[in-house]
Amino acid sequence: MKFLILLITLLLIQPAFGAVMEISEMKISVHVAEKAHFKYEITLKNLIDKPLVPGISELRLQKVENLKLLVFPLPLGEKRAGVDIENLRAYSGNMNFKSYYEKHEEYSSIYYEIWYPIEPLGEKKIVVEFDADIVDRGLLFKSITFPVGSDIDVRDLQISISSDWNLCYREGEVKSIPANHIAFFAAEFSLLPLPMLPIRGYLFFWGIVFTVALLAFLIRKKL
Image: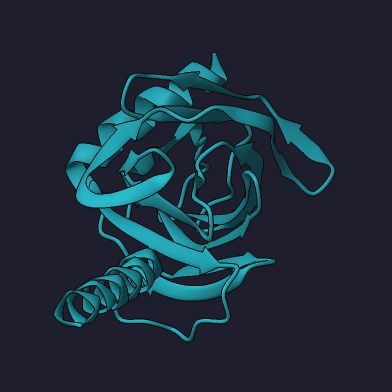
């Protein structure tokens, strides 16, 4: 009964006084290999002077792939799909939370449930980890694109993306996200020792290959 009263109280408070909770800090670490390992470190902040139960929270992932000719990526469009998730867990210290995911046609939803109250004006740090089949792989390049957003404000957002391959392109420099908004982050890695580029590495590399081949053909034709 106390739990029910608390939920009813919060439902009444939210429309009257606005947001009751925010993500004061979100750190996302991604390691890109054959699959991508995600680690979300989320600090939930209670903005009111009453205990607050977060309930069910959702993260969304979407796999973005370039269209391909055989194994060669084409700069002609993208395909978006749901993501297979493995080794999913959500925890805070020694406390584990129920977590699960649902795969849809164009995205996957990751859910974690927190039925323990956050103290008035207090914070709770939650960690969500999983492996995702979200890497777009080619012969010499592999890339990852993923969305970040929430139905509450994300005040301080920090993104770290790493791989054993060489980082040659990165996109997305957002440091905070308002409630009900979304931002996309992308990174591309290569087996080649390329520097950081202003465009996708595969476009740069195959553009050079095509240009050299075309010049060689034209020179040979003139001889």
